[in-house]
Length: 383
Image (cartoon, rainbow, N blue to C red; front, side, top):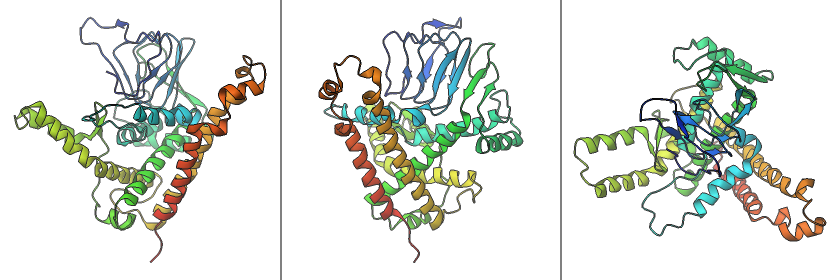
């Protein structure tokens, strides 16, 4: 089961063999699943969203809960680099969301599909994996929920302190084999996950408040002090809060929804509620970040200065995205091996054009400019 926005390479023989004598073997992958050439996977496997699997053969069953990660081989041992896309290939990540939306040429879009790589489902995955990284870094050896809190605190101190190069997660945790899996650059990935949460939460709130007359962030927040759920379901590309998805299924079971037309009507209602559900999710994400950073937790309101700091950080992250999109694409123009099939640089420029003329580079810069303007308007000033 592939949940959308996937890029299946030729030769990616996904799901070639069963490791069980039952007939219910399955592979489940979140949206943005990109297996490389000859990525032979065995049932059962489960992958978080936006997993890139490097070229190679993968003999064991895999459970990779770290979204946006690179999975690769180092001899017998598998290696996972958390948040690879945010760190090293933002051009592809940003472009994938846009091209998926632009290539949707359906005449009647009855099914509403979320294409943004930063959305409520991603926020939930990231928050779960932040805790996992802390526990694993604290030398935990399995996925049991009965972790002493000291392990998380020890792991958090290591991930936010001095450079923590890599560590091993015990065998039969991420891979069903006798080999432990190496987590590469965990500190950079840990920081990148938190950056993604900040950017998603702040951007979503700024855009929502700009589109609607809510009286500013503080007034909007004051009207919704209750804690919001972070668990969402990807229902064929349509993102739904887990509680609402459970209510829909319960309505089907008790016979309240008796036809596909009624079910589709319920999904249309959920789509109308999605903008508000999404922005409430973003608000809870910022509360989570504030709590994890040592601030006041729970449903206590985010103050004016805290909100303005979130905006300032989001602007820095938007500029980072803009710069990384440019630097990633620049490789296609500056790499000398890209030029060896042309007689000279002038011929290369005639074929490829100039990087400054690239439409996606230009649109990214314009989006960054608009984001900075929106951020200045979204700041709360002292009354």
